[in-house]
Picture 1 (spheres, one colour):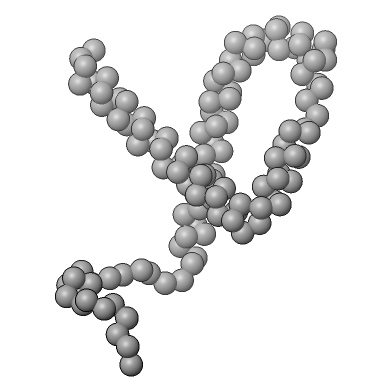
Picture 2 (tube, helix red, strand yellow; picture 1 turned 90 degrees about the vertical axis):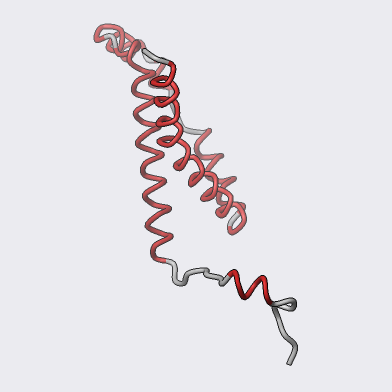
Length: 119
């Protein structure tokens, strides 16, 4: 394996993971600006989820018997990728539904000393 191959692989990983993280950050920030109590409520509900079944002896035996405890990082990684994909898809679909486009003419902005002329 050459260094350029490793560099290319890291670059492709960044291109794969960075946009969904940015979309998630923007979505969370906008939600916090619009409805700050919603984020607090979601965090409270997420931290109060009952995960007592993970300590159950029968569940532990099942996981150990099939060797699923060794695959738990893979499950978490795949779950994270699916979650980020769903967030990115949701953000892009919402963005397409919003009206309007922001455009500007650089010549007008550069040539105009007062962008808002008085009447």
